Length: 135
Image 1 (tube, rainbow, N blue to C red):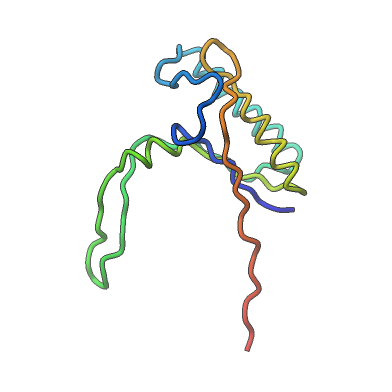
Image 2 (image 1 turned 90 degrees about the horizontal axis):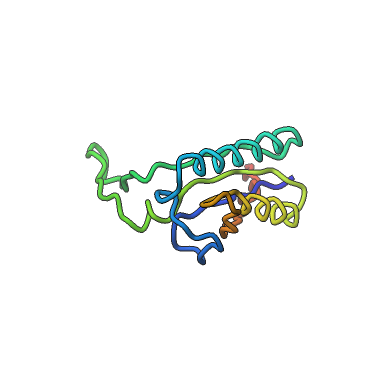
């Protein structure tokens, strides 16, 4: 089994077919979209392929280490980050092809007018666990 990150973008990816921003959807359209995501995750839990997933708030802050004994440095949020990442799901599947199949299905979540979004999802493999050095 291999883990993959299915990354949902607000912006930055190629435009979706049903490219109406979520803040312009009717409340029932948002509810239908969220329910689709829940149903998709529940189905993958049943097959053992779901690891975790979360929607992300548009708020955020960049944090950086600033040296021993000093408080972290903060800046932001930067618009390109909050605009870019909407949420993510981690799956654990047998093949890369299965990861692509599931991402394609997730892309069909309903949006404005109840029609599938056909959004682009980024599929990123996790690094395989690296062996530890022994002495």
